[in-house]
Amino acid sequence: MSHDETTLQLDPNPTPKAESQEFSNPDEIRRGQDYAHQLALIDRNQGSIGRLIGSTESNLTIAFAVIVVAGLCCVGCLIGMAWQPDVFLDAMKFFGTTILTVAGYVFGVKSSSSNQAE
Image 1 (cartoon, rainbow, N blue to C red):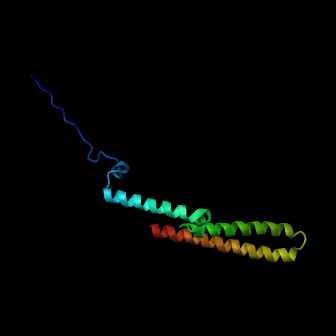
Image 2 (image 1 turned 60 degrees about the horizontal axis):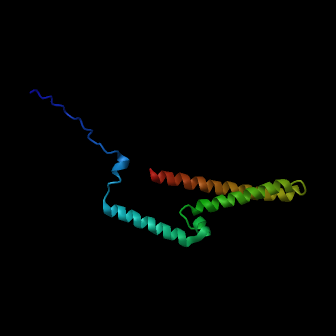
Image 3 (image 1 turned 180 degrees about the vertical axis):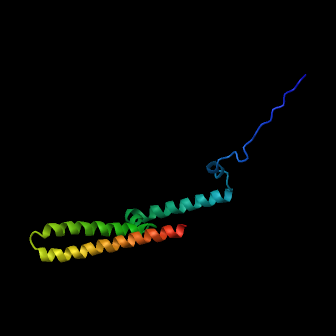
């Protein structure tokens, strides 16, 4: 009776990296659940305004609001220049400077946070 032996070739890392993270330490899983629960409690207690102002990205949210309001004021100044050009030109310069200053802050914050991630 002749017998044919076959060998099975196995992959040295059969579990994909994303799937292997599911098989982590139970303590790590518990810490992740506790952290998610704390975030949910904070989110529930803050309310809608607190989520905007009290979040980790609140400085960028407030900067965006300042840019939007100053932008609307600039549009109003453009319309007002038809009646009193001198007054509205000075206001336009002020709001334009505000927009550029806040935009510089936003881009500075984004670039410094990306440098820290590296």
